[in-house]
Image (cartoon, rainbow, N blue to C red; front, side):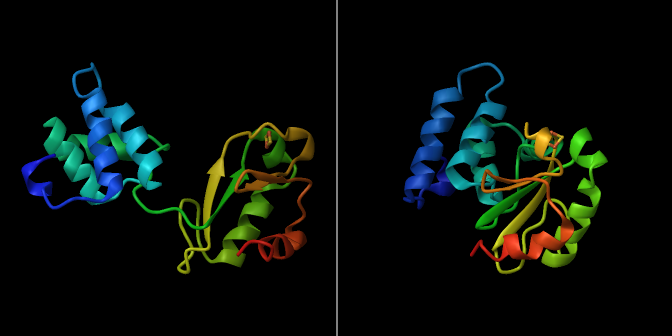
Length: 160
Ligand code: FES
């Protein structure tokens, strides 16, 4: 554990140190460390990135460079329900843009954001493998297909 983080006793912090120790002597440890840290925290909080930087001696600026380059990494927490809006070709052709626009209006957020109450996070994704049901969204991995914009409010109401 780094000297600046001696007061950390949170089980997540202990797990983080285990992850860092596991990869530290490997080549290119940063991405697997970040991936596993994100699994532990659900996203990559600033204090976690600082801790990784100190423990691995990788400059914080480089870590932020990697985190912001790859779409898989998140710097903000995910809402209780994660909505993936498919913008693959089939969904796009069959009205995916209208579905997205309706979700954005309904939730008052854009792609990548979380509602103020933490209830929903909205994310655009590529094909989720249910093209026959296009246009498609998934909420917490539950697929909703052949979506019509007017059905969206009713679907959202089922998620607390
Ligand atoms: S393009 Fe949307 S599920 Fe394949």
